[in-house]
Image: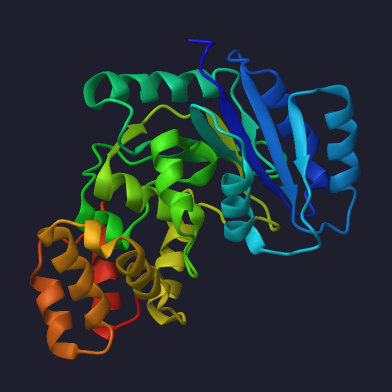
Length: 308
């Protein structure tokens, strides 16, 4: 299996506090045929110097020139994907986690299982569970979807793919960079939508990453309990609308390629933002749902108020 080339894409920004541990965990992977391509988004701390030191010592580590542009987390990853060389697979890395030594190997096993069933000429995406830890690497909990129902209607309103667990094949990469979106919620959700619409997803319930939660996270997770309840309540009253915009962008780029059922549900959701009658149609649509019962209840409120 070592003949398959993997390019790991890492977006950094003011990550010096935790970056070295992540770099070391990537270097320790049991699957060694990889290149680590990093783009820094204009850090003001020692991130870039740390990256340069590691790149000087390890020829597998490359730093992409940012040309003085700040793109934000999602834009940074899209730029990395666009500028990366051709490879069999592409994996995505945050700057502050720790990978289990067999993380890449597990992702490639999932990919090859899909390829054996579907071939490699369709978009394929691997993603999975995470062990949540705090800034001191103390375990908070496990974040996973058990018995996930991976469907188009669910993917429109919920992202099961956390980017730091994600790997994609060359087919998905080609589709993703053919026309870059002007707006997305996050890069991982965009790749997930492409895979669900036009290919296949392998969701691994075994965690292969320690996903660090701290005050500097660009995106994070919630282990459960009171924190999850506060988050769900907060979502009811937050300024929202990004999901509608992302669906509209997906329709603009890929609408002609969707089948009639996919296109119908996407257009219904997008149009319902400004049409109360259509919101009630969405509420009756059993194809549009979130995985967990309580999240589905929040979803229904967001749909009813036009705040997806």
